[in-house]
Image (tube, rainbow, N blue to C red; front, side, top):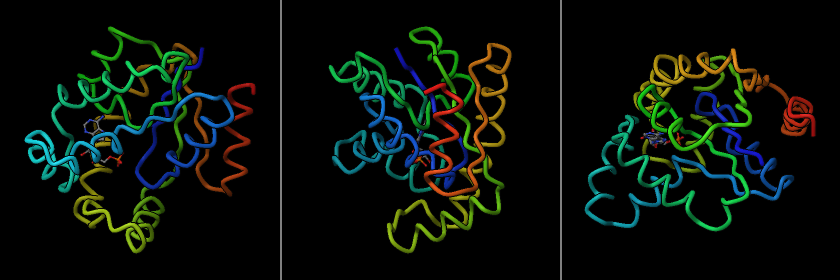
Length: 183
Ligand code: AMP
C-alpha cells in the first residue's frame, strides 16, 4: 500500500505531481491546504476562524489540521492508500502523524526560494489566492524552511526520503518521481 507524503516549498509543483501520481496509482491525492480552504469557504464558525490565518500565510492550529485530515482519511477512497500534500508541516504534526500512520515514501520537490516566489507570483495572476501576496508567500516559505525541513531530515535515516529536482518539465519531473519509486 502506498502512503506517500509529498512536500516542498509552495510553487514547487507538488500539487500537480501529486495528481499525476494519484492517477497512475489509482489512489486519491489529498491537499491539506485545499481541504482547509474548503472549510474556510464553507462559512462555518471554524471556517471563519481559520480564514484569516490562511490568508496571512500562517499555519492553522495543529488540532484543526489534524481533525480535517482525519475526516478525509476516514473516507472510503483513502483506505487503500493516499498521496498527501502539505502534511505534516511541523514537529508537533509529525509526532501526531506517527501515532496513526507511517509513510511508505516521502517525495521532496526541491526548487530554489527565488524560483518558488516567482512561480507563486505568476500563479497569483490567474488564481487570485488571497495568500499569494509577497508577505504571505515569504511567511509560508519561512515556515517551510524553519519547521518543515527539519522533520523531513528526521526521516532521512529510514530511507523513505526521495529528493526530486523541481526544475524541468512536468513530464520530466514525473518521470523522476516514477524512477525514484521504482514504478
Ligand atoms: P498550501 O495550499 O499548501 O500552500 O496551504 C495553504 C495554507 O493552508 C497554509 O498557508 C496554511 O494556512 C494552511 N495549511 C496547509 N497545510 C497545513 C498544515 N499541515 N497545518 C496547518 N496549516 C496548514
